[in-house]
Image 1: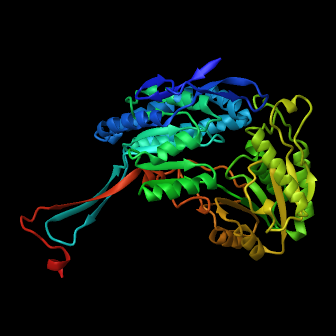
Image 2: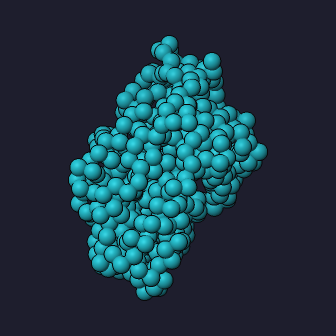
Image 3: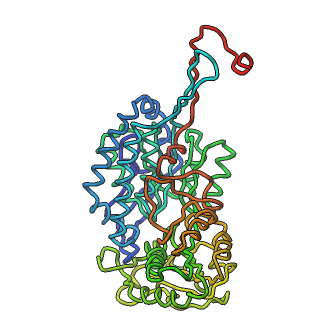
Length: 493
């Protein structure tokens, strides 16, 4: 049986706890191996190593730091298929999606390596004579990264790459469900020549390792992607400790379809957004806000496409929908389906744990469609994180905007229409961090900011240049070469 251990200060070491946790394949329940279960002492060792390494790393010119990231990018590219296979085996998404996720990490590595020759500040004219004024980015210090299982390498790349190119060190707690891919990613950093101590991998539970990262005085910022419940606790405690946090949490994303839309295109977008990654995306479409005049026609097109979806092991190239991550998630999804029925929503498809043809060995749920859903129902308000989508009828765009914005989340939204005026109204009025036009709610690109409004986050963004704002501080620099003390506004006005 494979055993995976922590990576601290350039060494692969098991926790002194002596405890191990099994990792299983969600497609068939098979045990894949064991992972060391860490303690607060392991986190402390990782932080001490990171602090020592970061002092030297901050003095390395950013273009030189970036050279290592270019090597990381090329190694990811060489091992794309191998990493995709590990990803699918661990968390279940179909292999085509796994390849796409690894490609996202590749893209992010090349992009952030390029930032090593930018990391732009500003030069501005001073208001005084013989004085120079500018601003520069400086690293924050040691970053604690807590990443989820649904995009285990993409999100890890969104956080670790900008942190490192900006001159920080990292202590990383991956999700307990996807430890093997985390190890493979760290091995790539190691092979690329990243100095020891700069990237430390600590396996363990959120209650122990995650909490220790938040509490440790040597951690200067915490970047977290996960549930609202956990994110709120992290934000509250980190605030008390005056630590910076970057939070990317839940979503309750809607596709709006107006009567002039291409319904075939809309149906494709809905099915991909709702059932890709088995609905286990923070950007998944879980609501379809549809104009009443085309509701039934759109439902039929979506149902036809749903009927052709094949469930099974994501390693099978012919499979469209893989398993959900674990039994607990399966039961949660089913409870929400029951809630929807009790609330009076009409179920048109799915609604059951999938069995037969070997599916009962894994964690499979039938793609589910509810219709005649009211905007205030729990299934239209709360994040289900599974293959369940609700159709909400509306009269017009005004009502669609109101319904779209009626949830506590604000990550992604979409509109299908041929009317350019309505497109621009939606782009202005949908209260989400991402808006798609004539596409589903998924498919973020790495060179733009990723994140949302309201309960989805706390204002920071992953990906793109905006991610550097998480991992850098601004320093303003003034050089006075007048040979005398100038008292700024006092002497100038």
